[in-house]
Image 1 (tube, rainbow, N blue to C red):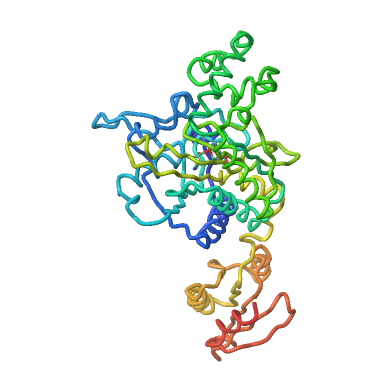
Image 2 (image 1 turned 45 degrees about the vertical axis):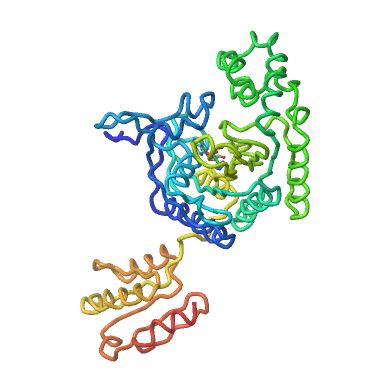
Length: 421
Ligand code: HAM
């Protein structure tokens, strides 16, 4: 057993696993930039008060934050999510003064002291988006559509979109009263957290991980019966827009989300698989009309979501979507003598600078071993350099796919590989 171990709930990524992270992040970035989003990079830690906006009754604030005092005795928290931090930056930098809608994306590690399990870590990576400045059903649809297109681009098909409206604050307060009444004679059979939530935030009971199968939850009053006319109309326009875009969805009355800042539209993309990832949210978010204002900012609505990158990788692994990632070298150089080895180092580095992925033998491996290296590299071209080639400024090129072998001039090598690969 190793003397030093990574902290519980964290992961090391190396080689192919690290490549998967970058591949997924790059693919998402390429799509999201086409939708007109710009990157925002905020610190990995914030003053703790920023995250208290997530809600006193949310598990994230109550139980999961990595909070500590720094040497200047300031309370600091490693960010458990991106929305509150992006709102802080949006306000601090007065970005709201810019005309029109602001569309941001961000990408990086988040920290939550959760019980580690399948797809659940204490350090994980989110790729998120936040859009500020407009409360319109069609904007909600467009935001949801970005996530939908990203799943298409990545080739992930076994997911379903679940969506709900939790209404405005007035609808929510009526609903909270109804829940309090409904649960009052059932709460004795429920978990201690639910007992507390009955007083502080009864909607949180619907999101309880312990009591999620409890019959009282299944038969609880539904938010849709307490929505204001405005919220009802807003939600029906969102659903119409999704229909028009051809995005399939399922409405789920019990979807309330674990963070307190949401209003009206909330949604999750859930994994639908036969393995342990089944049922996990791979992307989640919603609209937050009051968060910016509650942070002493102007009355600007927001909407956003975040992908869990490790969960995306888990699903893509199970679907075999990384099969061709990182396996293939463009070329591997075989050298027949020491002088040729020195020159092959020079050639390899010229080709690498030209954007090709090239390997070579640094030691004195036999030809058999060098050919094995080519196989391990899944190398498209095998380049062979011996005294004969070297003296004539030539190199022998074997093309593994077209099954050809020819001698070409060194100065033509780069174009030859690029033209034929
Ligand atoms: P969230 O639902 O807490 O929302 O997290 C979003 C996604 O991050 C989840 O659906 C999941 O894929 C991933 N995730 C969360 N916790 C973990 C964990 N412990 N391990 C691995 N993956 C995890 C938010 O964070 C909101 N800020 C999203 C949002 C943006 N809402 C509006 N704008």
